[in-house]
Amino acid sequence: LIDFGEAPTQTSGKLTCRARLLKASCRELSMNSKKYTKIPHSDYSESALDYIEHSLKIKCQELNKRILDSSSDIFNAVNHIEWYLGRLGLVGKELTALEKRYMGTLKKGLLTHVLSLIIETKKGMKISATFEICESYPFAVLDVELSLQNEVNGDLNLLLRQLAKSSKPGFGYLSRSCDIIACFQN
Image 1: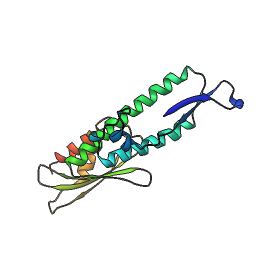
Image 2: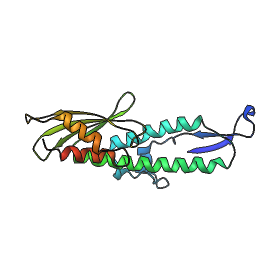
Image 3: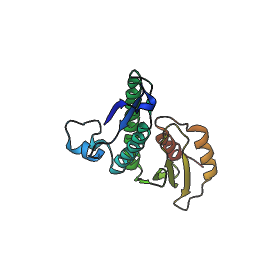
Image 4: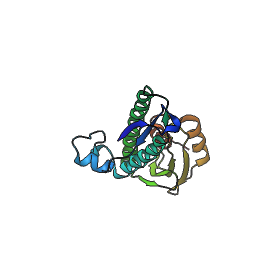
């Protein structure tokens, strides 16, 4: 829920944003409410819903610090919020799909969320891939850690170089990275 109001008198004519998550969490809204259908529960894993809720809390804190110059800036603010919600929805679906495909886990770290996956390559290597997902995902470079899970030899440094060269930030960045790992032949 976001509302806009007049700022205190020292910034006369300016508007402030007051943003907060509704009393119900994203999970409760997605399961129980017919009025709020932006986040259908069946589309997201529990951990993806946690990621979305955490991201929304951060966005609310950011919006609460924002001062608008005039009421015409409300349109841009709402547009930005809609864009952000759409991005969160796509990221949530991507995280859920990767968790299912690669038996992964998504956990909240200190400053980021950590996605851990086991990816089997075409040559039979099992690679443990750990991705740190920051608030600016999918538009920032991911931190990736790779390790072999079986006795097959593989050059993980070569794989990391291939990831850096071939998988660029943008929507589907994690999925593209996982596809490159799965197709790795050493």
